[in-house]
Image (cartoon, rainbow, N blue to C red; front, top):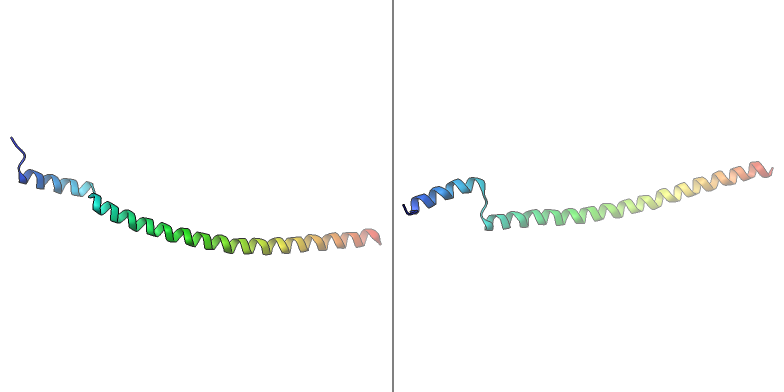
Length: 78
């Protein structure tokens, strides 16, 4: 009982529901990779913005601690 064309087309129908052809898989993978590449750029921009906020908060914290030290020293030295 050799395999004929009808058997092959039936197998393709069954496998098409479960599996993806290599060409389709490559296209899907390229699309996903492009999305991740854009996400990497966005994440880098967010890190840059967070770095700016981090520096600003450190400056505020340093100024606050400095003001507390100065106020404490004024109270002690009086």
